[in-house]
Length: 170
Image (cartoon, rainbow, N blue to C red; front, side, top):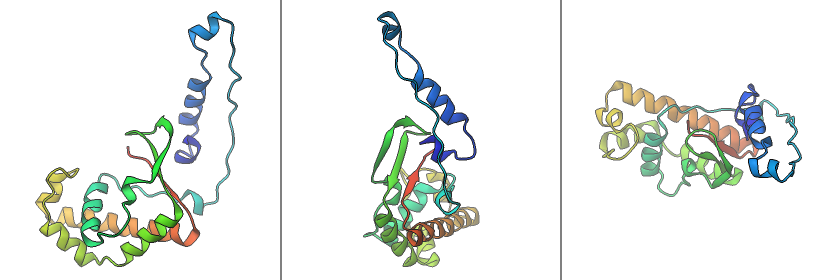
């Protein structure tokens, strides 16, 4: 997982590999040795390693998009978890390519005006960064729109390349 999430930096991967290679005290006492995990190399095209960083806007986006496109899949929930390694706030999640196609199509049907209307009309109680969203000032609007545009471009890219996505909350 770290090879994908941190493709430019091997340190997290190598640290996890070292952790996985540790032999427990019990194993050492009974003389049982694990076969050490060997570093693996993965090669990706530039299109496969497209990264989207939504900063802390994800929950506000999720809330507004769901109101604008109630039948859209919930991209931010993912479709399952990948392993048990903590990669931030929990393990990585995945969203399959066919779901990204549906989500991308749903986002294309959401205008920026409709998104801002949901921002104005919504109660953000319990939504992450609720203080920002409740302010509804120029900063909140521009933050939401900038990240919405990035999300729409990312999902369109994934959809056009038949790609799935890995979600990491940090």
